[in-house]
Amino acid sequence: VGVIPHIADLAMKMRFLGSFNYTFATLLKLIRHRPMEFRAIIDGIEERLRSDFISICNSKYTGGAMIMAKDVEVDDGKLYMVSPLMESKLRILKLFPSIFSGKHLEHPRVRHHFIQKMKIQYREPLLLLVDGELEKGENPEISISPGHWNLFMTKKPS
View 1 (tube, rainbow, N blue to C red):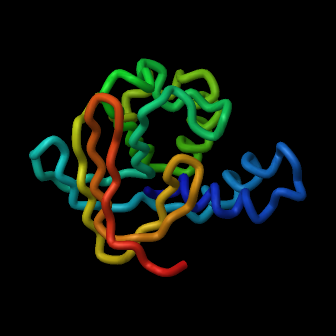
View 2 (view 1 turned 90 degrees about the horizontal axis):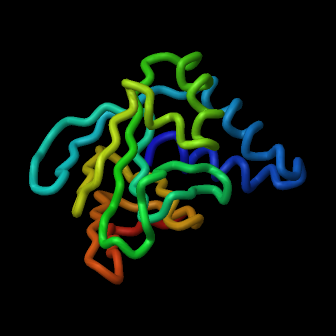
């Protein structure tokens, strides 16, 4: 949730740009971007979470070549949460290229750790990027067990 699915949505609409579409969509979306505030329940602990995006990963890669979660194995029965709060458009623009190498995880403003379960509550339906597919829904809840992961949410029409 957050800026990432909105970037992906725009990038899909700009496929005519070829491999440059994602980078161009990122630049356009980050110009207007503002962090979001969520109510989150992470492994049973409730908190207010302010973030540019929340990425819940069960593999190292996202978007094909971006190393979002370098310590994750697909079959390890763990989810990995990545949640930056950069507080400025310039900082997030500087962070973006480091996702291709996994170096973004070294930045002190990027929260990242393994989780088993997370529920996000927000005042309106959220656009989510679920394994490369865009979905819109309310209050997504994700959990994992060895061998499979589950995503539950009230789906809203696009």
